[in-house]
Image (cartoon, one colour):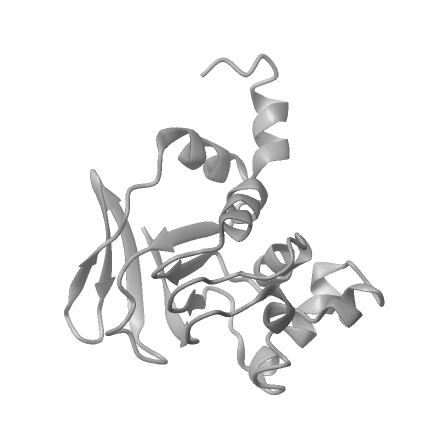
Length: 165
């Protein structure tokens, strides 16, 4: 189970909103870039992030360019999961490959600051501790969970050099 505070955004959050591309020219260090997380939407946001926070968004999260740093900066900020109604295909794969859990669910009822629990008890769900509501989440395939549990694709390959599924 993963728990955290909801940090809520809307639809169509593109990778340049997550971390503007001009910042990656300055550094690729997630510990440096975390200071600029979502600065295009809210310049004060990065300073309010606490380890364990959860990003919550609407549809099409991570659209735009395929820059992997848009995932690593989220992880660098101590955020372990993003919940959204849908993800861009590239962001979803980059998330799994880097160890960030992408959770597909109906996020419409989640509000800023709500306490959430992401559960995998046979079926995936998100319990909003603040409201008492439980939201059904899309299942995460076993191979993706194995990659996430390993910390990403590179650690997974190091662990399973023969790649027998």
